[in-house]
Length: 82
Image (cartoon, rainbow, N blue to C red):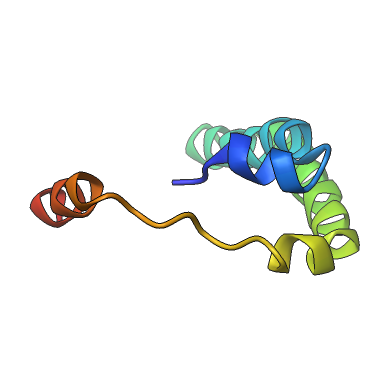
């Protein structure tokens, strides 16, 4: 799970790139492979390539983000779900 709001607070533009390029790219690839739809596979690959480029350009800022400490309730929920 990605806390998009937290990352966006540290790296401006993350939310848009994550949603429009990474998530949509993955979804298009999955649909393209499941339905043997070459155009969706190509569109998905193109979006993932754009995501990779943006991610690489912003890698230094992304690496500076520290994950917030989990509450004990979140930790227990995570262990139960596992």
